[in-house]
Length: 185
Image 1: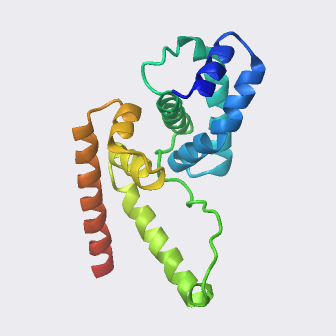
Image 2: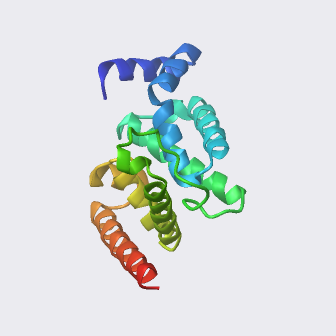
């Protein structure tokens, strides 16, 4: 844990609302991305973001520093997003479209046929992702979208690194098969 982060957490544990504000400023974008990766709806992700920081403020006294603060916050966010999804009676990881920051496009990417092909591909991937188990989807999102290491994913998902590797391997394999089958059909 970084020295500044340690001080912030300590201040927050003592009830300092300014410390929570600083923690929010440091982590809110990451928390939003995790929540959005699960829920795929902007409003739901924003609701989850708010709930995570309320929950963090209430429970930070229990943080002992056994794992990194980021892992602690990540796990809290993932659990909150899954709980929110269950409460809304929807399956996590499958609603809506991916939100992306706009990327500069070359001339070919700006063509309507290229944009349509890209949208079709994204829809195919999303449909294929829906057919994966929740654990495989979550693990792939944490690895491919959030860029976490296997070790970090294991801490967040509370499982072994071997389990993470297995979920990623079989999730990718199933995705390839589903996309290949869809293309044939």
